[in-house]
Length: 169
Image (cartoon, rainbow, N blue to C red; front, side):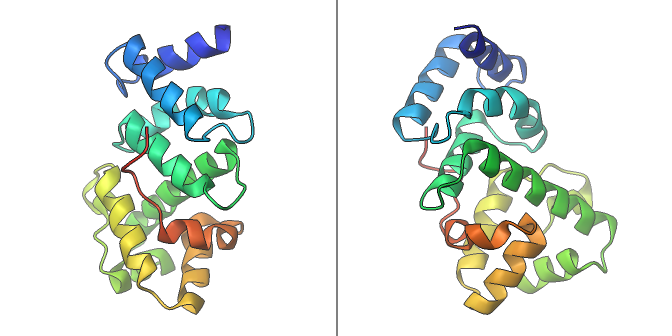
């Protein structure tokens, strides 16, 4: 019970949801949709709520993203949250070095990096990346998933194609 309340409080304190009832409703749906595959969802949400707010995501968008990364990969919420953070870090690196592989790849994919202007990534960037990624040849997808999601990224190639911030809890 304490961990549940801490998680709900984190969602409210970061502004990801307006109140405890919304936090409870959202987490209930996330659990019902299988978001707690590894039994780690409460700890992950509690630990990452501020990061997701800083990324410009709502709680629903963040949880939908985690859910879509978990589907079909066997990944835990911890794995999915790390992937999302690695993606955010890659966009930060791309903004810091416009000649980097990440920056060049974003341009090749037709993706504007909001971090170039000092903005948060937001749901539109995640959804746009997934859409562009889905249209890339599979050999390029493997390279791109490693470039933006780290050495474990290849495992998520199929999930990245279906990555979405919509339709979840």
